[in-house]
Image 1: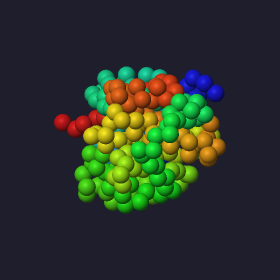
Image 2: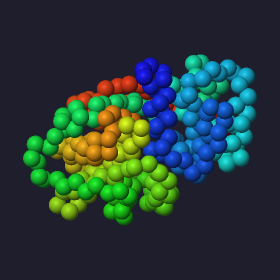
Image 3: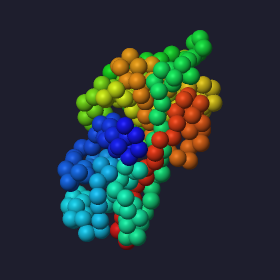
Image 4: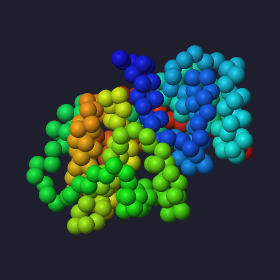
Length: 257
């Protein structure tokens, strides 16, 4: 598998790592809504790579779905999306948001390239479900409002696939968290975040090592992750760990005047 078929395959895997509260089929697309919180869970998945034209009747269903929920119409656009869709959305006033990269790696190589070399300054706890400490740290490090904690608890509870919630501890303080979700021999990493005051000390490397090692134990021989395209420190970390750019995505959003 390669090219657009591979992009579409990974794009579809990503749906299971961040499941929306509401979904509705729209031809080969998927409409997603989740109280307006997070772009991914409140956008149209268009990664099937099928044909499209400006007269596509799916547009009416899309607009009605989001209008009825008082949400902006937002499309998830990747290299697996239909040709011409992104340009048409731009011509209609849809604003580009959050350009991201999808990076992939061989699991064995990623484990080897992040081996911790006997560094015992940090301890890793691997959970099958997020505990209170993991959740509180996730909310704080991602900069989310504390009142969104119940929303994110519900979101993580919807992940029906094998998953690991990793905490990196230093002197009994959680300094980093991350998630790995496995499906069809692949593992997808999300929520990879390190305390801003502890960056540059190898914690991120240890975190992605633990995520990759757990994924290997689940039979995943390939890894993928998403990263904001202009997050240069994170991109450098992943490239040093054996990850290569595969494709990109962004959102197109229509904001009402």
